[in-house]
Length: 187
Image (cartoon, rainbow, N blue to C red):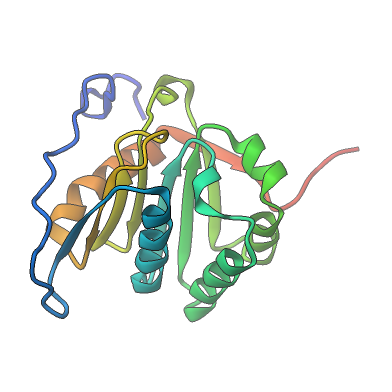
């Protein structure tokens, strides 16, 4: 892939405007909510993960706010991966060393499901990205504009709003490389 692709230039990328939150919940219909605390973000991630059926895509600096080393999170991810052999988890981080050293439960899942989990590191050219993004399938999205701020939004059963965020994740994935392996190789 050429590094001159203007459509993947993140220096001037602006997120789309926030759609208004949904006021009335229609079963199976799109839901949009604003999130204002880290606890609400963690709860929203649980909700998104429960609705995701095929592919979970995550982008963050180091996954510190996702509780990847908790027993509950390990069981949620294991259940997700056991639903179907074709289920996948794609993770992109700026700092994979933190993931590898502080998330032994995630590393255990990576060893058990090495065919289904990929952990990448962003290329140097996009290490300045500061947002947090989770996309479940092609219809659910959880995001924060900045990793240090608790405010964000969640979109459930909303493929229209999720489409732009899925494109952003795919562009980030293209500007990353495998970083954490299920095995260690050494002499």
